[in-house]
Length: 466
Image (cartoon, rainbow, N blue to C red; front, side):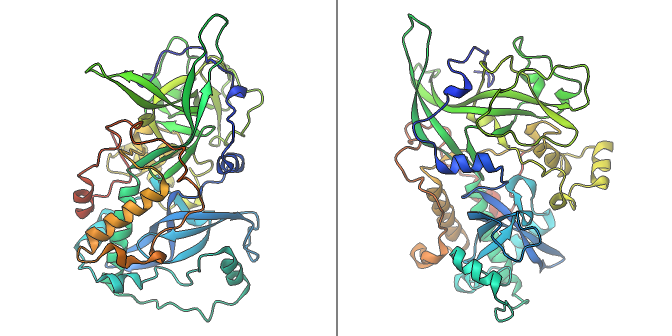
C-alpha cells in the first residue's frame, strides 16, 4: 500500500472531530505554540561548556519535566517560556529558558567528540552519579526554583574541574539512554469515532487517538507535522497544482486524526495499522501572484503555527472535506516555528554553511538536515524513525535507563539506582486508553537488536538521511 491513498471526501467536517474529553495537555500545547512539551526529549545547552580533550560538550540530552510562562522574576525577557528539565545520566534538575534548548533532530555530537567519549575509560557508578554538568542544580519542585531565583547563588558551588572519565562516562550514558528513547513510540488517549454517513448506509466506528509519543516528540491531533515524502511523490489528480519551486521544499500535514485501520496481510490474515489523516500543505512564496492560496479552515480550533519568513501555508487538498491518509511511519517530526533560522542554530546554520551547502551539498554535512526542520527541503533529510512499541512514556524512560545502566555499569544492580535517579513526569499516560501491544503493528514493537552495537561504536544516529 502506498503511503498516500486516493483522496475521498471525509465522513466529517473539521468541526466534527470533537472527542468526549480533550486531554488538557493537548489543549494547552496546541494553543500555546510553545516549542517544547512535557515528556519530550531535547538537547540542553551546557553553560559553561565542558572541555573533553580537544573538543567540548555544549549540548546534553534531557527530558522536559514541566514548564511555566514568565516564571523567573529576574528574567530580561519576562514572557519567555521556562522549563524544568532533567539531564540524562545524572541526578540533576535545572531550570532553563526555551532559548537554551533545542529539538532532538537539530543537533548531533561532532564525530571527534563521539570518538573521544567512546575511547575514554569509564569510571564507576558512584563516581559518575556524583557529577553535575552545570553549577546550581535545582531540587525537584517549582517552589525550589522560585527560591533560587530570589536568593544569591554564591553559596552553591560546583567544582569547575571534573575527571575526564567522569564526564565521558555520564555523557555516554546520556547518549545511550537518548538513543533508546528515540526508537520508542505509542498512541495515547483512545476514543471511538462514530462516522456520519449518507442516508441508507451503515454507520461505522473507528478507534482513534488524541496523540502519540513519537521518538523524542509528543504529537497531537491538530499539530502541523513534516512528512517524509517529497511533494512529487504525492501528486494526485485531486490535489491542487503546486506553486513554483514548492516541489523542492518539504511537505506538511495538519493532522486531523490518528486511527487504526484494518489491513489484510499477504498471508490473508488481518492486522491493524496505525495511520494518520489530515490536510496537505506546501510552503508557497508569500509574494507569489500566479497561484491561488486555495481553501482554508474557516474557524480552526487551534491556531496555525507561523510559517517561515517569506512563505505562506498553502493547502493543496481540494477542500476542508478532503483528507490524505498516511502510515504513521511517514511522519518526519513536528514543525517548530521560528527555529530555522534562529540564534540557537547560528553556529551550525549561517551564511557560510549555507553558501557551502548550496555550492556543493555534502551528504555528511548537517546543513541539509537543519534546513529540513524548517521545511526548506523534503523531510527525508531529517526524520524520527521509531520502531519499538512501549505502553507509555514512563515505560520508555524506565526501559531506556535500565538498558543504559546494564550497558555502562554491567556489574551494577538496577535496584541500586534509587528513586532520585529515575525521571518523574507530570503526566498520567499510564491510563488504559493507550494503544495496546496487540493493536500495534508487529514490526513496530520488535526489539531493534542493533541499538547497543551502534552506540558502543558511538555512531549515534540523531538524523536519518536517504
